[in-house]
Length: 125
View 1 (cartoon, rainbow, N blue to C red):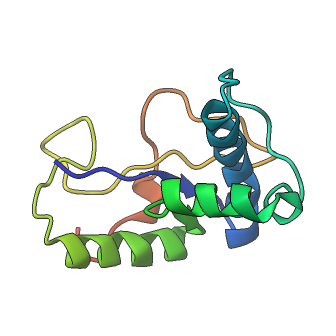
View 2 (spheres, rainbow, N blue to C red):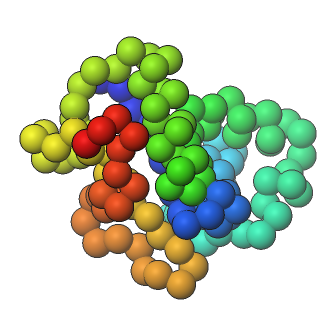
């Protein structure tokens, strides 16, 4: 079973902004201060010390962050790189369509587990 973190938003820059929540959470966890998922922060990654950036780059190396087009491209690259052939992209095993929650500053988080059906799949589904 393969897994990876995906953060998708209408634009690459908005997805990177949302991703700062996860970056903060990992940094806090690794420094012995676990807690709830913090809100996104403008310029978070850019203001880190080099050692903190290195740690996040290592821990989150497989994360896919971007717009629907970027996420689709990265998921296809992940499948090609790993030769993954399982169709279990979503909780409903009958679906082969990747599903990921898309959240924006102006839209509340998705209810439930998955909701990227709008991205579709470049593999013909």
